[in-house]
Length: 222
Picture 1: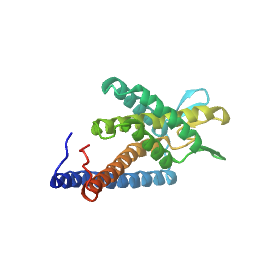
Picture 2: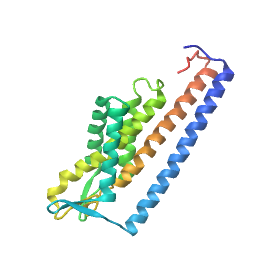
Picture 3: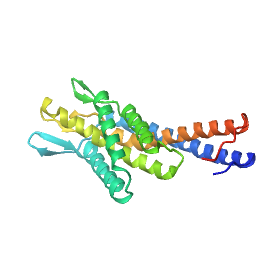
C-alpha cells in the first residue's frame, strides 16, 4: 500500500462517487416501482394458491416463488461462491428476529412492514459481510451481501408464517391470513443492499478525501 498524489485521489473519488450516486438513484427508482406494484396489488389482488397440507395453502406468487428464489440463492452462496456459512447463519438469525419484531397480528391476519424489514435485513447483511475489512474484495462482499440477504429475507418471513399457522383457519402462506409481504420484501431486499452499500461508499470516500486534502493526513489507499 502506498500514498497517492492529489490528482489520483480526486479521480478515484469521482469514480467512486459516480458509481455510488448511480447505485442510490437506481435503488430509489426500484423501491418506488416495487412500492407502486404493491399498492396496485392491494387494490387489485391476485392469488394463485395451492394446498400443501389439509387446510393449509401457499400462494405461488406471494410465497412460493420467493421461497424458491431463496433456496437458489442459498445454494449459490454456499455451493458455487463458497461464501461463509457462519455469516449466512448469523444473518438468518438476525433477519428472523427482525421479522418477528416487525410482524403484527390484525383482524385480517399477520401483517408486516415489507420495506422496513427489507432495509433492516439489508443493512445487517451488508454489515455482516463487509466487516471487519470493508474495502478488501468489496465487489465480492457486495455479491455476498446481496445473495445472503435475498436468501434470508423470504426464509425469515416464511418461518414467521409457519409460527402463526395454528392461529388461523384455512391460512394461505403469502395470502389469506398470512399476507405479511414475503414477495414485496424479497423484491425490496436487493435494492436495500444496493442502497446501503452505495451510501457507505459515498460517505467513506468523502471522508477519505477530506482527510487527505484538508487535514493533510497521509491516508493510504484502501
